[in-house]
Length: 224
Image (cartoon, rainbow, N blue to C red; front, side, top):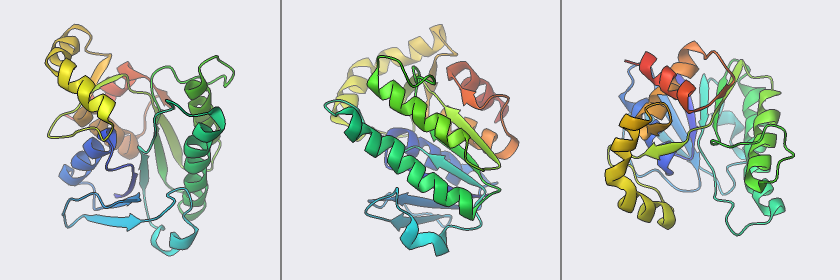
């Protein structure tokens, strides 16, 4: 399986990249972003673009892929809805439309989050925009598309967040997360399990197009 990965330097993307490189069924991983991932592996190649949503200059490198894991995202804190929509909906759909045209047999997996608003009319701005993004992706002519909505995530295997707020949050709450996982096993996941669940969905499909935390955990179990 040949994979494209967006957001490989983010917390979820780092976890997905680790699992892709570990998986013998993954032949190659093309990481698309503004910066190199800083990791060396025979499977791995970076494609650096100033705007990851505009793939027009790289179409010759983007055919022959079986799956895309889109883990790229930004915090909505301090942003207007217009700004956040440009960096979320517009960027994601710009990339996805190109990939759907070049790889109609591709499975596209998008990471949003718990609380995403599929109605697109709720009060929470980020949830409306994420919901609109999910809805638009599900209409594209991919072989399959799955929307992952993880809840609380425990970073493992050296994965860290690039966002200072989240680094501080995990430094403070880190000792409690394993306990929360034991108490709420279907609500708290790890970067490893999310990566494994995404690989299962890409290879075998999933029972739903929108996957909440318990659904993600159930998929992760199938990777054992």
